[in-house]
Image (tube, rainbow, N blue to C red; front, side, top):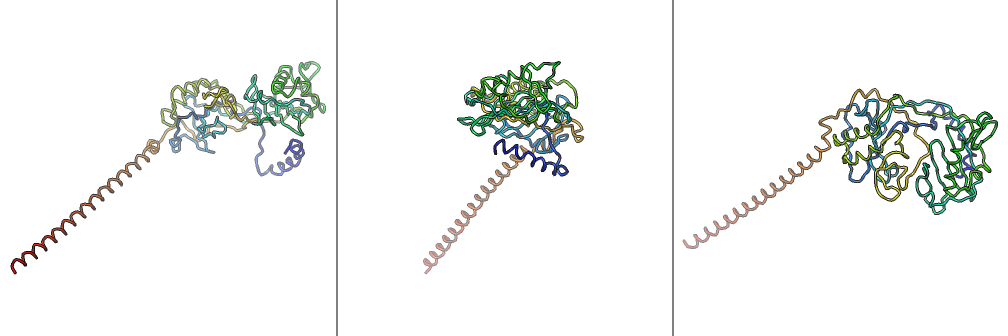
Length: 401
């Protein structure tokens, strides 16, 4: 379905959503997500192992929606969230995600949003210029085709989606927050978008960045190509969600990540080297979380595997939308994690018990075989004796005769 058809169905979709208003809870895109208050690593390096069975019956661990949550050993104002991660969104290898998350609260606020669709893109995407996943701070995600049909360019509050329609490229530019109206008192140094009595200033720095990435991709020769012909989707205040910190407290994320990974290793929940822990911890910082930004073990642009931010890996699949989920400390968590001593060893006891059982069965089988053989042997000897006795008796009778 092309863009025109999508927009032509907007009214129908709106009516359906309104009808479902009392059945489901509506969701909204958020300008700042919980990932902006977290750091995350996917333990997916070949040779590393994990055993989540130890957390199943542990005290002060909440298991919900396939995630284990407990209070950090570094700071009781941080949550540790552990879940399995698909290899498709973690550098090609499956592993477990370990996220250190500050508790967050969802707030509704209004931000200035500019959303325009340019119909005047004259150029073509140069595949070799968009195959790397980043350029001057922009994250790039394109379809893998000889003639690229779609690309996403992401940086901070700015996103650009380019796609082909009727043989030409279109570009949708969306800026959420960090912008304001044009005014006589504050002259717009970049470009002023006006529509329906509203105006929005794209400042010179942002204008130059947009121009740079689209020129690099081969789509335009100057910013004027982008705004020669465009339609406005949205220009003005928009209600949006934002996730704010519940506790306003400075965290040393490197230390927090290092201590948590060390604790998980000491309990044999993960098996990882101290060198890996050091390399991961050095990358940990607030905001290094979520699909685009989390730490994974993947190939870099030169094809060399290393611990790296997913967006900088050789072939990432980037996402535009942010996850607008609150994270709170559950009342069920009353302290630190306590592992059950019996159940924590169950993972190792079961295979050991199976081994002992198999050895016992084997020993019994060998013993039974030997007994059976001895019985057959004795039976044969007895029969041979009886035959010998009969022969002796017969021989004696013949002599007497």
